[in-house]
Image 1 (tube, rainbow, N blue to C red):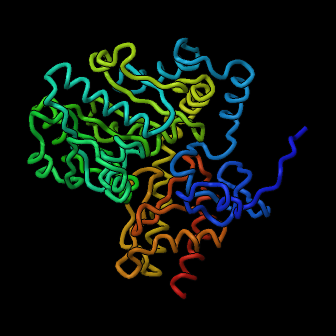
Image 2 (cartoon, rainbow, N blue to C red):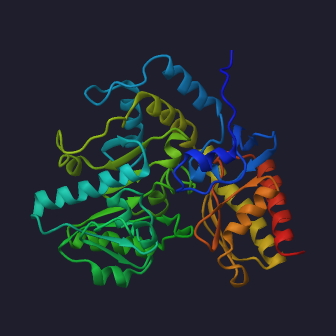
Length: 406
C-alpha cells in the first residue's frame, strides 16, 4: 500500500526553501532508465544525470535490489563499528585503483575536505608547520565548505563569507609554466581536476598532468586529483587518471559512485593514510551500510569492459550529432570532454546564453545542464540506450532551431 502524501507544487519551493537554488519550473516525480516523468505526467529524456550522479540512470534494478536488501538488514551503526558493505566497497576501490586505503564520506566536498586536510597533515608531520600552501586552478570547483570553496578557483562562490582559508594560490588551468612559477617547498599539495567540470568541461593536457606530477615529486608536495565529476566510468575509464597514465597521491570520488545515493570516498596510499590516525578526522554517516551497498552494486556494473567501452562509443555518437547541430545553426564553436561528460561550447554570438539552451531544451522535454554561462553540458547515464541518445538529440535540435529562429 502506498503512503498518501500532502500535495506539493513548484510554488512551494519559494515558500519553504532557502533561495540558494533556482530550480526548473517543473517537478520530476519518477524515473526509469533515462526517462523522467514530472507531476503532470510529461515524459522527459534525461541528459543531465543529476549532474553526473545517476551513472546507471533512474531506478536501475541492480541498485534498487542492493538498496532494498540492505534496508531490511542494517542502516547505520556509526564508525564506532565497521560494517560489511563498507569493507566490501573499500576492497573493490583498492583493487580497481592505485589506492591502498579508503576514507568513506558523504559528498564530493567532504572527500575533498578530507584530501586537503590529509595533505596539510602529511606536510606538517613530515616537514613542519610552514609547509601548508595549496595550489589549485583558476575556474576549478571543489565543493561548498569554507575550505573547499576557498581552494576552488571561482571567487563568486567564496566571496562574502568572511576571511578565507590562508595559503591557497590559483594558477591558470593547463598552464604548466604558471604552476612551475607558483610551486615551492612550502607547497603541500597541487589540486587538479583531470577534467574541469563546472569550469566548462575542459580536459587536462597530458603534458600538464605529467609536469604536475614531476613538480610535486620535486617539491615533496602531494598531487591531488579531484575526480568527483570525472570518476566512476564517466570518462570511459573507471577514473580519468587511468586514461592519462598519471597517478595521483590522493583522489576524491563522489557523484557517480552512489548512482544517486549520497556517498563519497577519498583514496590514497597506506603511507599517507597513516597520518590520519584515530581521532584526527571523521564523519557520522560516512561508510553507512545503505550507501556502501548501493556503491558496491554500481561498481560491479560500471567497472566492466562492456560498459566502459560503451561510454566511449556513446561519446562519439553525441559528439558527431552535436557538431552537426552546431554547424547547422551556428550555435556551438566546438564539442569537448571525455566519455559521457561532454561540453558544447557556445559560439561568440551565443556566449553567456547557456541558460536559454537549458530552458529551451526543457520546453522540448529534454533535461540538460550548463557549465558556466558559455557551455552546454551533458552528463547522462553511462548505460543510456542509443535510441534515447538519438531521440534526445532530436529534441535538442528542435530547441536549438527555435532559439536560432530557424
